[in-house]
Amino acid sequence: MIEKENVLIIGINSFLGESLATQLYESNMHIIGVYHKNTSNIKDYVERVHVSELSQLTQKKIKTIYFVSAYISSNDEDATLLQTVNVALPAQVSTLFPKTKIVFASTVSVYGLPEKSPITERTETVPLNIYGHSKLAGEHIISNHALYAIVRISSIFGEGMKKNTFIPKIIEKALEERQIVLFGDGSRMQNYIHVADVAKYMILAAAHQDNALFLATSVSSCSNLEVAAIIAEATNATIQFEGNDDSPSFEYDNFETRNQLKYHHKDQIKKELTALIQCYKKQY
Image 1 (cartoon, rainbow, N blue to C red):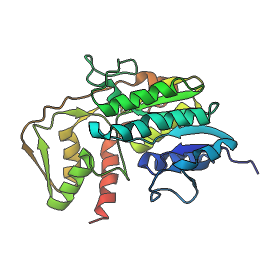
Image 2 (cartoon, rainbow, N blue to C red):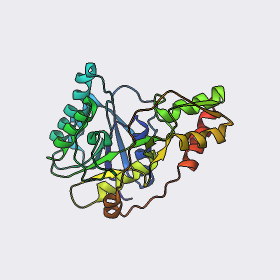
Image 3 (cartoon, one colour):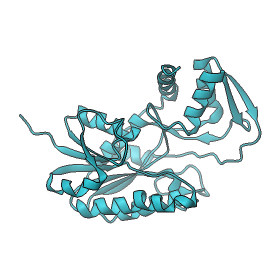
Image 4 (cartoon, rainbow, N blue to C red):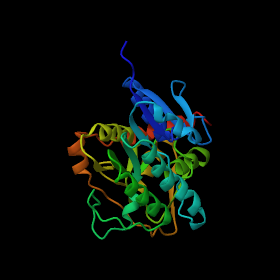
């Protein structure tokens, strides 16, 4: 019997960690998952390790480390947690595993508000908030590691996502009240990418021969109204508008990433949102 190769997922309990574990397990990898507090999303086939026990894994032969753990906040009062999770932990991992390739999940928040659109892999990074700064600091640490890939990700959605963002909020509103409320006219553009596609990007980045930075985004952005219309159709909800939405629109072009990784996924947001809605319906 061929012995399975070990891969390490730091942040295994997240919905991206869960999707990564599923795809890697299907590729016959042995999954070691590092968690902090919660274990509710960890599959039975994952070898569980608490973050405090990271140093005990240095004796294992690990093929790749997927770093998907993140603390997300734009509140300056959370500076200590942002530093601990997004900066200090990547530094610890780099030190403990100096010869193992690290695939680091970063964020498009590092770009801030660029002067030119669309945003690409080469767009200048000027973070607007403390979260973006902390992830950029994590990137700098990983970019000094011997073997690495940095993957900047737009808005991830899919089963298991946290319910404090736009998509799950309007799904729940549609299911509970048969109503969706949009600020402004709903024309603001955002880029949504399904969690399974992000996991695929990260796995391909791990296999890429050279150290590199990649951009995991959908081929096209869509407006809040387009997203709401898909959800309204699937839930028999109505759409209402109120107030103003002064937030900026974002569009991306990750042609360079898709070309390097040979991954040309199709945008299937209607199909993927409909599947997510079905999951939510089971709760009602």
